[in-house]
Image 1 (tube, rainbow, N blue to C red):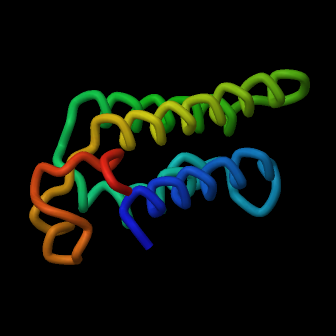
Image 2 (image 1 turned 135 degrees about the horizontal axis):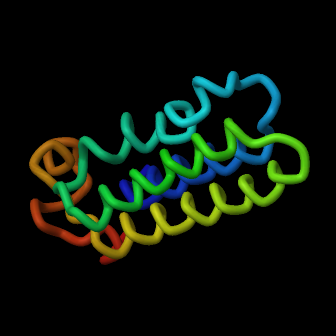
Length: 118
């Protein structure tokens, strides 16, 4: 699996959790569950970038809003969260660069863009 594929898989997992909420995930756990795959599989392998971190924060905020929503607000909050996940995925693929840890794992050379050749 390439690093770009890991980004896509992490985003897909976050979207599935958003679509299934409320359900098996507790409201207090939702924000951390939504970004869990991103934080474990992607974030350690890309160089830190303010734009990516800002989008990650947006996902966390949108997750909290969904977790605190009720009634008719749930659908709107869910759409907002899915949109935030989409932007996080897009920003990582656009701005993400391979770091040293990712190079050791065979994801490319330090500084390579994720969107290039993956």
